[in-house]
Length: 96
Image 1 (cartoon, rainbow, N blue to C red):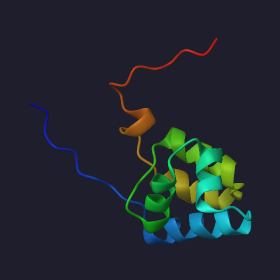
Image 2: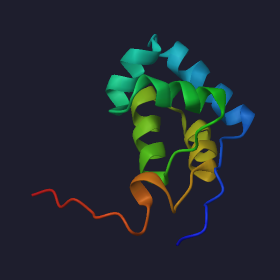
Image 3: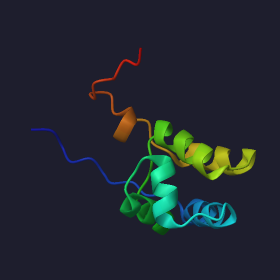
Image 4: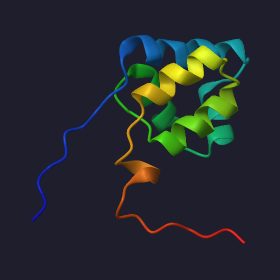
């Protein structure tokens, strides 16, 4: 049996930055979720600081919200490399 992984969350200032960027882009939670290809509850979790994206997901979020360079760096620095889309045991889909 594998040990439980500690759940990580975004620092409050990064979560607030995501919310501000979404609002700046004129997007509602559901519209932002569609652009990111995630559920609206995931977006709510990110903005509430209770979810932490993988590096791959963080790049997707940055593109969808049009984050500036500094905002993108902060988000990527807070992202995780061993969970979600970047989990080392997940099968990678090959796009042809």
